[in-house]
Length: 368
Image (cartoon, rainbow, N blue to C red; front, side, top):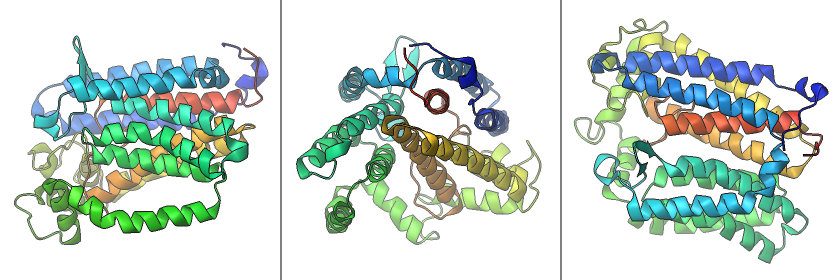
């Protein structure tokens, strides 16, 4: 289980690790700025604790041969679904966030769907690996889709369409990377187009409003489009160099809703300007490049697919969050990796990095 040879340690991706630490530090500073007007250090403390726990998780996972995790894919999958069922039965959050997405165990509150992201990526990667020889047979493909789709249906029942979209995206990328025939991709595309009218009528009213506001940003800036408008104005006011850290007018006077979570990029844009935004994007580019390199260099499909799934998850979060903040995408409750406030989210992202680093180190298939 724990078997790290000295020569394997040489394959440790220090560039990826340092980049992630820089992103975490960047996030802590911006959360501090976003919550300065709230006169509480709770958010910064929670994020800092989650980051420290995440670093410990990374070190532990680096020492752990990822093949051991693969042997537990069935218990992991079962546990993930039990957590999602528990959310439907005992969860809360409908009044605050419009979805029953949270569980509380004693003093601890967390979002099970965040942990399920990792669990499903691990279990789906192993399930595909076990069926890779017959992946283009209709029955095998149906089993893979059913295996991946069941937890997504449970998340849609919360209902949390934003998180469900993340799942659908990384599932699709993982199956594509496994070598699925293009004819199935065209079938899926056709089914998706034909399903649009049905999906539209199943959307809640606030979700439809978000789409309308995306298509016409000026239609309801005092109500349903207020958050999007304030975010864009704040970013625009930062110009090239920003107003200065802790000096953002829209940030410090609380004109931006959810500024420490979903709209943290608006804080960056206002206070650090174009330079701050580009710096963040460059750090993300380095992180994603190193993850793709690990996936490409992996000697087995299981390890490669895990890293591909995690990378695609990060890509979706980054693209959607920054896109919705600057008006390129409709607003969803998608946070920004390593930047947005959220203890569960931060810890999950760090665990993903730890698993990816483990794949990079143990790619020769060490015994355990």
